[in-house]
Length: 267
Ligand SMILES: NC(=O)c1ccc[n+]([C@@H]2O[C@H](COP(=O)([O-])OP(=O)(O)OC[C@H]3O[C@@H](n4cnc5c(N)ncnc54)[C@H](OP(=O)(O)O)[C@@H]3O)[C@@H](O)[C@H]2O)c1
Picture (cartoon, rainbow, N blue to C red):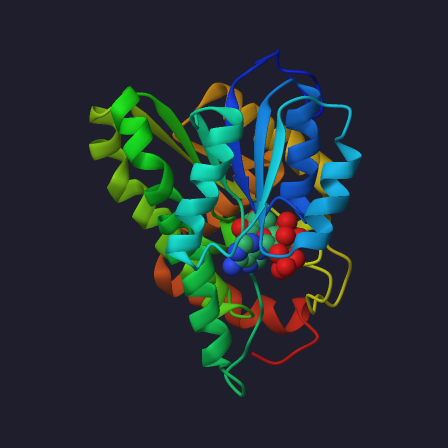
């Protein structure tokens, strides 16, 4: 089945989605709404959420909450409020994330800390807010958005790579305990997607990128099928899998030579 094809109706299932107001999250919200899911949409700023809600006004079962995933207490309250309006959370899609590049001449440690807070701890807060209910019902699906950038250390974004590797490992470690209690975890690894996050990446030549709507179609498939891991698109999955399996010395050699040719910035 190709990305973009309808994968079936799931009317009535309640999905909470963080990072819903922009990029992949926004496109995914629209794709899920079109399939009849009931959606609790969260993001940290109100205005883009309001415009999204207005765009989805003809769909039933849409609720929004303005919340920062780094604020655990507010996040729990937001989840409670969304569940009062929609019903218990059946699926959590933890999509909120931040990504910046850095290099050896400017490590941007504050940016790194922020990426760890949002991309790792923010996802943990989001899971923590829905888990008690899922455990009580012995059912649930958690979809964490990692990245192929977490497969290996990418020289132009060491902090982002490290944050996504940490998220991948965190979700892997949670998986068996949650499975025993009826909750499935899917880790998603998108390739490059054209969003605000990738707008200013310093590639020397244009890099093939998916549009957010294409990424959303893949994400919907992962939500429906519940695989353990899901990397897209296929070309990226194959290429990055080879990179992931390279012996460390060969990986270092490749990055040392390919990096300066691929990037306009020093690393
Ligand atoms: N684009 C790619 O190529 C790519 C590839 C692999 C993985 N990913 C991952 O996919 C996810 C979505 O990325 P994207 O490309 O769609 O980026 P995006 O367009 O920047 O969207 C990210 C969304 O998350 C929100 N967000 C950030 N920090 C938050 C916080 N503390 N609390 C609540 N919401 C917060 C953002 O709000 P603001 O607009 O206010 O910042 C934004 O709405 C991220 O986890 C990203 O790491 C992206």
